[in-house]
Length: 238
Image 1: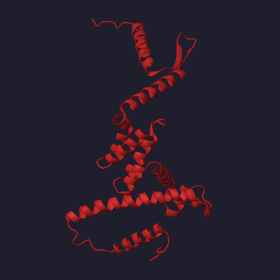
Image 2: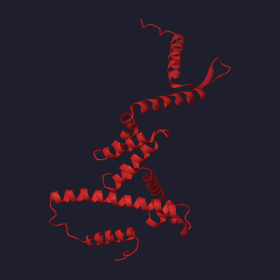
Image 3: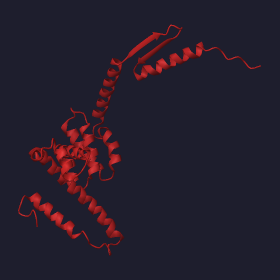
Image 4: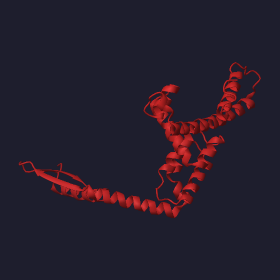
């Protein structure tokens, strides 16, 4: 069998390829309802395990510069050409491969077939978005929590859960982070505050402004009161 006698990865891939070849034309007659359902679940888990291996080899491909032999600019562009996939898809794969090197618990869940590719991408993004100064123990707890949740939730659910994972594993840290974020937003809004007013020479003034959201509500009330106050009363209908 091609690949046997080389690196263990080569040998393993050759065995997998051979097993799939044996199944190419296999008849599904006799595969009953229960066995069909079980097979589909097991195939999905096997897909995840094989995908983890692919991403692990892809991370290695980046480290050894596999693209250099073909003159491709990056590993992602090389992968796109070699596998006939889009550059966007290949970039996502390289990004996940890199992330998995940092998130051991996620990689283990992926390799065990407990996390699929969609879930792995969402979890990696959620972990990347955590505060950079977060204690490593808290980040590890958040990672484990999301991996555990992947056993019961799809990628869409995990995207929402990932945004709030700090509220679960470290509420005090989450509150402090949220307060700091809001304070930063307020400072940025204050820096952007501006007001310009230009008379048009015909008795009116035109203006533009940028104010924080809280002040915008106050300004709107004042302007509405002014406009209503200045409007002539409607004549009563006899």
